[in-house]
Image (tube, rainbow, N blue to C red; front, side, top):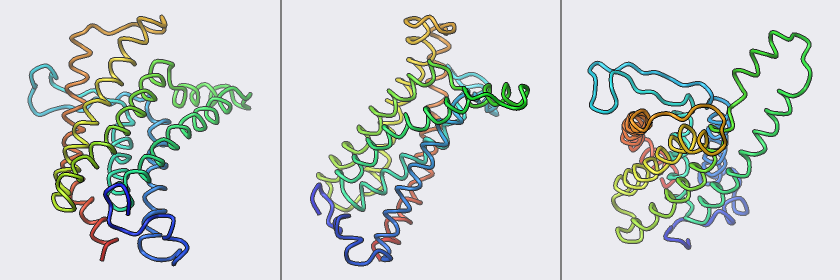
Length: 240
């Protein structure tokens, strides 16, 4: 396959056998990516507070992160599996089509919020739960399109130098780097840049922004380490 992969190209998977393991895996990974991405959009408004057994420097006694953090981490897992099995171009197409689908999700959610409801109390609660702020939307969209593309490009840059060996290295290095970029962009835009420039909400102090970035990245890095065996499991199952 082009773009560094030696497996059969996705354009031939379904022509040969739409029920083959690689074909089913391709559909499953794309579905997982889109499902996690849509879930991330509708859960981003809730801010989670995870208590730590000990207070950490900069971070403090708890990690604050958006509810979308876990769902968003799953998208990196899916895109790395796609990149490894089907090549850089396939992964980038999925990532960038997914970016466009973000706007479809937002349009559907916002149109539902704008439509009149039978019960005003339920409608109000629905709006609070599913109505992400302008700051969160701007931060998440910018962070997504930059970090996901960096993840795919870096993943294949490492593969071009190491070959098929060391999957753990390219999975960890690409995800750790792209998640760092994602965290810095999202937190900076959502809680500092957008409130300052758009005048929506209050900008957080720099110290608070730094604590948010550090705490979120620590958790995302842990998830990246934990998902490596599952990347091997999926890739190994498809290549058997």
